[in-house]
Amino acid sequence: MTTPSPRTVRHGEATARAAAWLGHPVTMAAIGLLIVNDHLLKRLWPGAVTGKLSDFAGMLVAPALLALPFASAIRIAEAAARAVRRPSDPREKPSGEWTAVAAILLTGALFTLVKTTAAGAETATAVWGLFTPPAQVIADPTDLVALPFLAVAWLVRRRVAGGPAAERAARRARTMVVLPAAVFAVTATSPMLPASSAGHVEVHDSAIVVFSGVSGEGGAALATSDQGRSWRTWQGAPSGRPRTAACVPDEPRRCYRVVPGRLKVEESADGGASWSTAWEISPGRQRLLDRHYENPDPQGRPSDPAASVAVTILPVPGGHLVAVANGTDGVVLRDVAGGWHRLGFAGDGRGLSEQAAVPLAGFGEAISGETGVAALAALIVLLVVLWLAGAARRSPAWFAFSGVTLWLGALLIVMSRKDIGDAVSMGIGASLVLLGGAAVLIVTVSSRPLRGVRALVAVPLTFAAVYLPFLGWSGGWLDTYGVAVLLAIALCAVVVALAVRTMRRA
Image 1: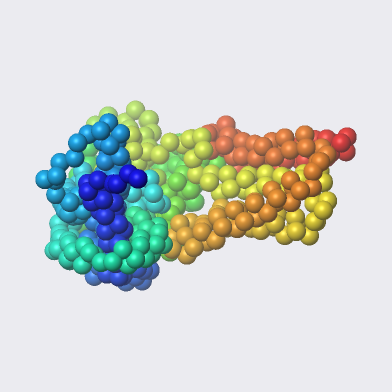
Image 2: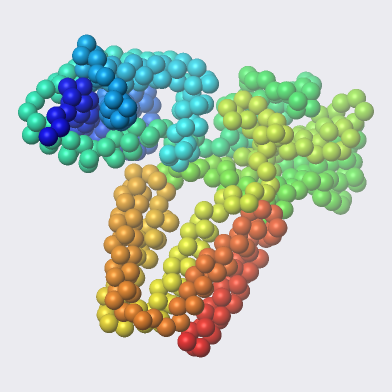
C-alpha cells in the first residue's frame, strides 16, 4: 500500500481548510449581505452606506474565494512533482498558511489598485462585464476604509485551521452550496448608470455648450471652441429653455429646426416658409440606437431617448456652425462647409467625439430578444416533428408534459435579465430544461422506430428563418424593423410547409 507523503497530506489539508474558510458562518453571512445589498438595498437606498457595506463584505468573501483555487493549484503542482519524482523538502512550511496569506494580500492589492486609479477601475469594469450585465466600477479612495476587514478575514481563517476530519468534510459539503452563491455575490456591483444624454445646447461667447439630462437639467455641461475637436467642463446653468428652432443671426432667412421624436434636422432658406431635410438618421437605425442606449437595469432610472431635442447656431468667420442635442446619441455638428458630424459621449461622459459615436449598423447587435424568440420557435418545431414522427407513440401524455416543461424552462431563460429575481428564474429555467429535455429524450428513444426524421432539418431552418431577418436589420441590410418581422414570418411559413410535406411523404 502506498503511503501519501507528508507534503501531499499538507496540500490536501490546505484544500480542505480553504473550503472550510468559504463555508464558515461569518463568510456565509458576508455572502448573504453582498447579494441582498447589491441587488436590493442599493436600489432602494443608494448612497455611501450601501456602497461601503458591499466593500466590507467583499473583504471577507474575496480572500476565502481566492484561497480555494490557490490550494487546488498547489495540489495539481504537487501531483506533477510526484510524477517526475521530485524530492520533497521537509523544511517546507504548510501550504495552507501561504495560500491564505497570498489570497488576502492579492485581495488588498487589487482592491487598492481599482479604488485609487482610473485604469484599475476601467479594467475591473471590463472584467466584470464578462460575467455580469453591463456594470460600472468607480474609483473611490474612500472605499479603502474597508481594508481592515481583511484582518477579520484572517481571523476567520485561523478559526478553521483545525478541527476533526468529519467537521471539515461537512464544511466542504456546505461549500459546494456556498461556492456558486459566493461567485454570484462578488461579481455583483453597482448597476450601470443611464446613458449620458445631451438635452440642451447654447452658445456662450465663442463656445458651444452642451448640457446633459432632459432639458439640460442634469447639472453637467461640456463646451467646445474648436468645432468639437476638444471639450472642457463648463460651469454654469442653462440661460433658458431648449430651442427647437433657430436662425442664423447674420442670415435671418436661413433657419434650422429639429423634428420631434426623430434624429432629424430640417433647414429653411426662406425664413421658414418651406423646409427640407438637412440631416437625419432613418427610423430603423434610430430604433437600433435606442436599444443600444437602453438602461440594462430594469429597476434603474430609464435612459433618455435618442432624438433631436434642441438646436443652436454659432456664427464664425466664413459661415456658421449648427449644434443639435440628440439625447443619448450625443450631438450632431454642422461645420462651416455644410458637413454634419455625429459626436458620441466618451466612456467617462467627459467628452464627445466622432470615434465614440455608436455605429448605425452592427450584425447581431441589440437583437438578443429576437435570438431568444428564434430559439423558442425552433424548439416548438422540434417537439412537433418528434410528435408526428412517433416519439409520443407509447406515452403521449408524458411526452406532452415533458415537452411543455422543456419549452417553459427555455422561456424562463430567454426572459431573464440577470438581476436577483431573474437569476432565480434563470436557475429554475435551466433545471426545467434539463429535466424536460431528459424526459423527452427518454420517451423518444423508447418509442423507436421513428418515421419522417428527415423533417428534423426544419429545426435549424426555423431558427435561421427567424434570426436571419433580424440579423440583417441589425447589420443595416434591412432598415425597417417591420420588414424584418414580415420576412421572418414568411420564411417560417415556407419552412413549416416543407416540413409538413416531408412528414406526409414519410
